[in-house]
Image (cartoon, rainbow, N blue to C red):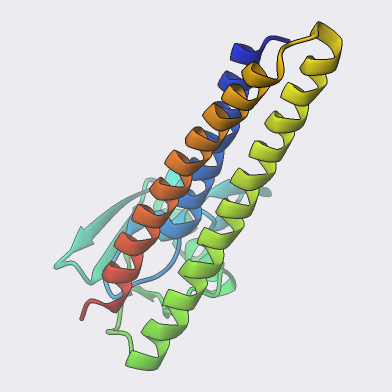
Length: 186
């Protein structure tokens, strides 16, 4: 494996960390209705656990309400059960045709608690990024021995890996700051 392949591989790993962080943060409930919060909700559809968003159309009304319109009206009770089981902190309301999830405004304490959770998710992402950096640095050092690369080259390549790490760490910070701002917004 060449140094360029190692750098490409570390960038890919770090990009995956960023994507995972975005996915995790999207599922965090804020004061606004966000259909992504339903990604983890599984409905028992004829004996098979199926994603809620595959079984229905989800729309946002007035920024604080999710309206779930199932494609098959016979599963509305199953959707309600799945939403209660998912423990979103919101009670589903059904009129037999659609299910509504009304997002109440968050209290100040709850906002701070959620912001702490956002920081914890960011720290998990940063640890994963640092682990990828460590693995890349170790791989470069192994190349030094196996291919007799000069010390200066190894130092330059290690610095390049650090620059890549700094870039992705900065992206994590930007994503986290934006999510914290969204959470603390009233």
